[in-house]
Image (cartoon, rainbow, N blue to C red; front, side, top):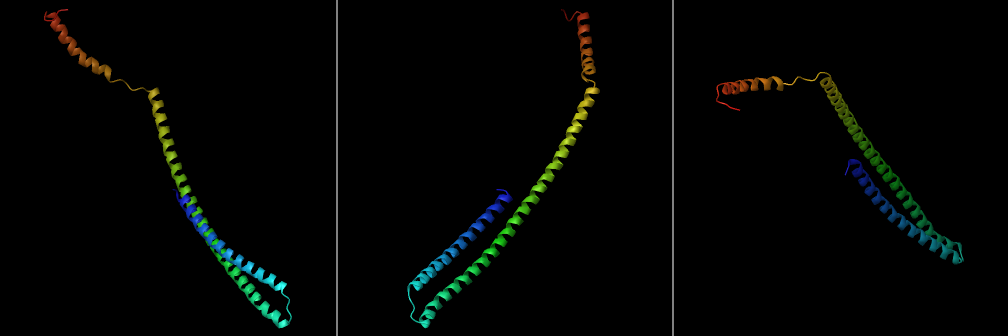
Length: 164
């Protein structure tokens, strides 16, 4: 697994965990909202006889709404903070991967230049070999080896030791 894939996997799992946590918080907030809605509906159904009774019934609803707003604000602050941290991690991972890729590309370029240089040298050597073929060492070696053998065989034939 490459560095990029590892960084992407870690970032993805981190973000997934954060999203799950935020989803749980949002569910709790949604439940509180449903509770508030039901309380509001029951409040609307009831008819208050007096202002004091109305104030007494509105106070828990107002407190619950204030609590819900505060929890929502805190949750949103955490979401923004964690999203920024995740973004920084992702940017750092991408920058690291980019640097590694650039380094690998540079190494490949230098290797290609070395290969091209070797190919050029081999082509020059092949051209030189075609234009100026080397002399064969076999001609003089064969003659110098066969001449004494021929002389010995000729003497043996001349003396009658060897017959054809």
